Amino acid sequence: MVTTILAIETSCDETAAAVVADGRDVRSSVVSSQVDLHAAFGGVVPEVASRAHVALLTPVVAEALLEAGIDGSELDAVAATIGPGLIGALLVGVSAAKAYSLAWRAPFVGVNHMEAHLHAALIEEPELALPVVVLLVSGGHTLLIAMDRVPGDEAAQAGSPVRFVYRLLGETIDDAAGEAFDKVARFLGLGYPGGPAIDRAAVSGDPGAIRFPRGLMDDGHDFSFSGVKTSVINYVRKHPDARVPDVAASFQEAVVDVLVTKARRAAAEIGARGICIGGGVAANSVLRQRVLDSCAADGRQAFLPHLSMCTDNAAMIGATAWYRLRTDGPTPLDVGPDPNLKLPLA
Ligand code: KG4
Ligand code: ZN
Image (cartoon, rainbow, N blue to C red; front, side):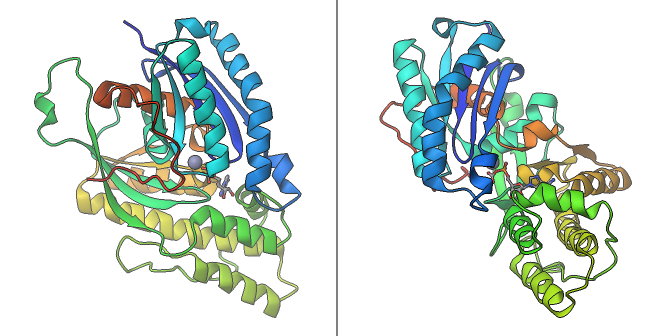
């Protein structure tokens, strides 16, 4: 029997809803970005985000159901991101999902947003060769995670879900990679969000023009991006005539170099079959090309989810909800949002 889930994502500045069947078949995925609302402030304003979610969620859910050609009463579960994220923003999606769940008598499933980024690749690659090293790079997180099936689980009965286990290999000790892109872009006057702006500006720049520092490059699996950000600021103050595309390309080169070097080293260390990327920064064109090239050179698979699956969306919430529903069952309705929810690690 097919399990059809309505999933809702409102953890930050994207109001999203999707209908996903059996965790893989995305019947609809609607994302309403609030980026224009926040651009005037140069970053996400939590109160503005919450109010926009209130206004946008009902029409976004209606569109997701309409596109999927399904009535709410036909749903098998209603899922929502319960964290991590902005508390006011999370509350809108979780409260709505619980109300729909009661109205349509479908169980509620609370989903961890970071786990959902890990599962995004599975939508396009259900047979992802494990173990895989996942580089999760967004505006709030920079994590290197080993994703594998639970040891001994191979003997599980046919039809029972594969159980995943996540091991944290490394994380940022200061700024997240996306945060560094956003701060440098703001300093260079490239606007918000910074990542796509730097990606675009770098196209006409020389990535070898300036050698910016590669934080913690030869030191374990952790990351540090505050040094490169400060270095860009100091360089531009000292060289006011520097070409913006050259600065953007050189900064991007430094960040991508560290991300790929570390992911590659971690993959070799744990004997990973592949490298997967997720989170908003995974949309970066140079990062994608570099992961492809290095995996080809190392004989590993590169899993690069489609751009729409890298940035925040509800399809990945629906995929994860299906997995969690099968392993843990529904989430009790007294479980509320947790802005600091952690990834369940081994
Ligand atoms: O995962 P995401 O959509 O939202 C969360 O932070 O949870 O990631 C947004 C981040 C922002 O910092 C944005 O600047 C960055 O992803 N980003 C990029 C690119 N597109 C988005 N960074 C580098 N290159 C890009 N093309
Ligand atoms: Zn995200």
